Length: 362
Image 1: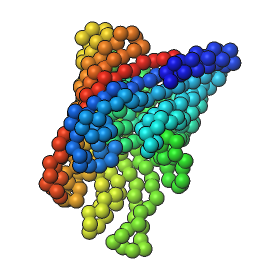
Image 2: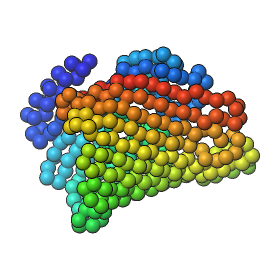
Image 3: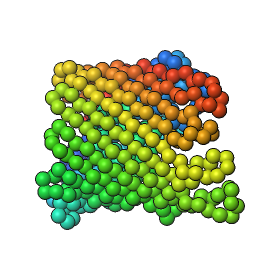
Image 4: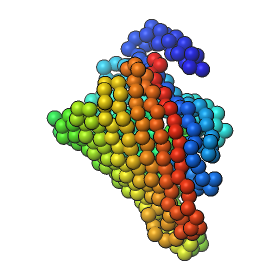
């Protein structure tokens, strides 16, 4: 399959250079060999609340987790476009690798001042900066992406530009369907994003994000015939520091959903909270140690029905780059689960050992 992708990529690169002139094709792949060292047979929750690799104890397999195929084209000095396909085996319930449109947008440069306009399927503001700062997407998604707090892509329109001439403060504002990637909008509700990026120096940066997802009203089971608001607000922030061989960052979010939690007697606001601490240190230009810790509580309500769902997640690895476009990363995933008071039965941690391979194939 990889040989086929390489051949197809080489062919398209030749075709695009002749047909499109300014176009550029790129591709990246990452996958693993993984082995589940430990699992609990009664592991709770969905993929949003459990980060562990699939399968029970001793499950082992080779897997692709991401293949990107990207075409960027300079239409003119003012207009550029991107079309990106992604192949992923985690999309379909069957587990088969499928391909879908990841990006498809037009960029209108300096539509006014220093601001650019984007239209189409495009990245959302929430964790674009923190993911780049983390730098190890091949190991794991950033916390908000991993836990499904904000979609990585949405279909809409956005503006990006400088707030100050020196570029210390920049902004990103977006209105979109809120349906994520590949999903057709089926209601009139929209999601609104606002983002400020602060670059204090070459070493220190920070972001502040807020978004509101307007959603259709929900039925109130405690007042038959009535409907209540179901909007969702997310506030998040990130701070990153890079100096010499050290790279470190911290990210946190709070998400509140109106009437999103049924406690058995009434509908209440559901509040999720999480934070992530990560760092890497370059031992040499081609070798680095990587570590990360996440805390995630999908519902901070202390009532028995919701209590006991906290997650602690650790990623640790050693990155070796035998080539500038190839990384081999032995790593370990370790996730623990709070004991639910409703059952008072402890849940064993999940431990997965992996060897991750990432390479740029075009």
